[in-house]
Amino acid sequence: MSDNKVEILLVEDNSHDAEMTIRALKKVNLANKLFHVKDGAEALDFLFARGTYAERDINNKPKVILLDIKMPKIDGIEVLRQIKLNEATKKIPVVIMTSSKEEQDIITSYHLGVNSFVVKPVDFESFAKAVSELGFYWLIINQAVE
Image (spheres, rainbow, N blue to C red):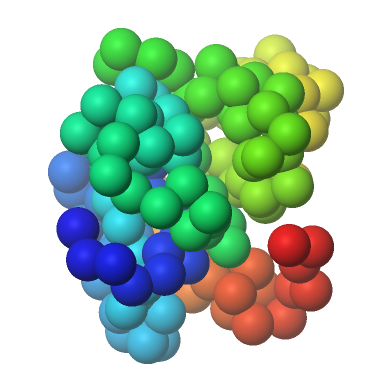
């Protein structure tokens, strides 16, 4: 990983969904500072500079985290819980991007402090449009607290 500032942390175990997300963000020039991890454990290691990422500057926080729920090792709900309970990471906006429409996932996510919950559209055009709009909002329009 380069030392460039990460603006988007994509936490997605499905390689097809990850590729579509990255392609949609590249199309609107928002993927230059994106970093992709494949499960919840890797996401937490990245955010808290542990394990493989122990040498990473922990102060280099993403502007937004795009987080899937259903993942191996540690699921997205637990990743969200740990992000929002930690003083150093709790202000990072987290957008759940999932195929789950389960009401309990939505309720739990908002209870834990998710900033947005988005159900992934099935077709590529709708998916690309949704990802592009999310990227513009969280990286360009939204005014974040450091």
